[in-house]
Image 1 (tube, one colour):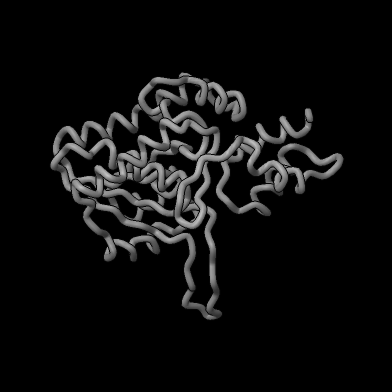
Image 2: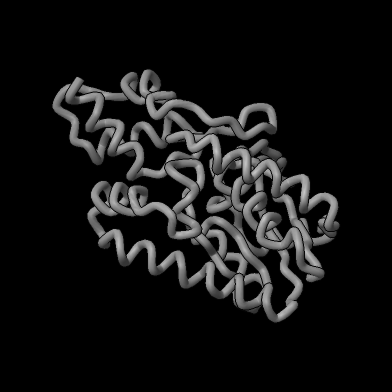
Length: 232
């Protein structure tokens, strides 16, 4: 079973592989990680309020359905293959799967997809991606040759780091030099504020922020920070 942490990339990869892929849009860079075990509902309430497209219950149920599929596959003894990148959602998702599988004999394989590439051209160009959503599924298949097993010892070590991230319980997480760090909710606020313009709509500003601040923030999170900045 293949699992990714970006729903858009999951759909593209499923088309390329010609088989189902679980695309869990967990947004793990934001909020209390205890929500994955049902210990917290604050995250779902916040996301539902800022997105305005579904209720907190609907969002939680949708994610729990995907988690249930993954857990059922693990319980059956299925091999699991995780596709991830250095985006914090992916790094944290990989840690989480390692924690789920630290005590089981199932094969766990990882495929790490870079967030940059040099195109063959013409003309040759250097591309940098915000997230795996920008990868074409067929192009991503090239990284299957680099898939590696994750043995039990590595799963245990990585699951310890996941436990640390859960216990730290920061409002936001970023990847810096390959490390996932917890930061305050206002970490990006100065850069977000720099893109605000008088008489421009929230939608325009969100688009501006996402274009000029290519770090893969969820648009709904940016909306929430803009609300805070406008009130300050």
